[in-house]
Length: 86
Image 1 (cartoon, helix red, strand yellow):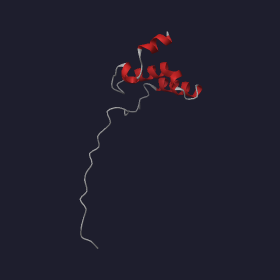
Image 2 (cartoon, helix red, strand yellow):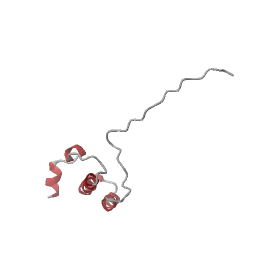
Image 3 (cartoon, rainbow, N blue to C red):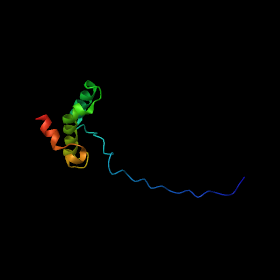
Image 4 (cartoon, one colour):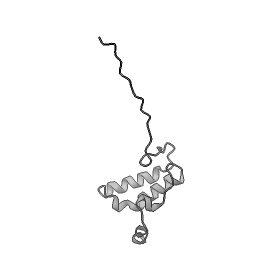
């Protein structure tokens, strides 16, 4: 048997800047989430038809500190979305 041991590097995990946020354990946004999931189901997973519901859900998450507050334009929502829903 060999007496050599290989040096093991320790890897320090770095969390992603975007795409990962805390779970809603308290259920603050559960109604919005269910509404969004139903919208997706009813529209054959076409998220373009559920943009207003998605915005409501993300707004709830930001209001309850479940994700960092971002500008709507950075989340893919533009002023055109407002005009088309009005």
